[in-house]
Figure (cartoon, helix red, strand yellow):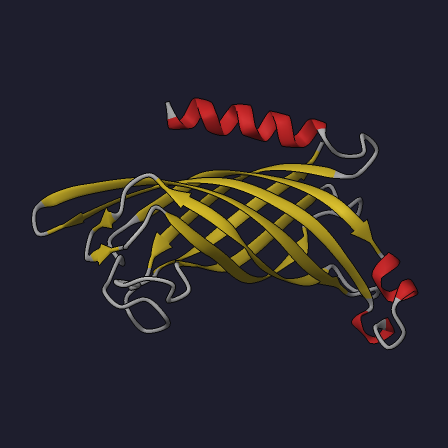
Length: 190
């Protein structure tokens, strides 16, 4: 049922925006992480698969409208809507969870190369509170990602991004171990 709700919500949100804005659809593949960075506990045995939708909201206008931002080259703002499925094994038990995330994403692209960087903070819903060693206090989480990527082709139809993804409740409640994974996102302009 969660996957059907995700598709309905993706469609509804997509219809609410300017029809002429650039849109991307994509696939996500990733791997869980150990507790080296933010999360406490390991999900390094987890495999991540998912789908992504991106709609550009503001392109290049950020630097034009705010003094002092010209050094950012080509800053833009997009809305990312993503659905992930994580499957992992811990203590001879299989764990699976789905995550649905909506994130405003700030993107800084270079005028002179195909490279870009991005950072996002948004909201996420995890359908299970327990995943491998990670036990969250609620299903609702903050979603954060930081990544770098490049345009695969000169027409900028394809984007490939390497991301660090973090989900936590921002210490609003305990426990708050966080859940981290790295991912490759391949997006195609539709």
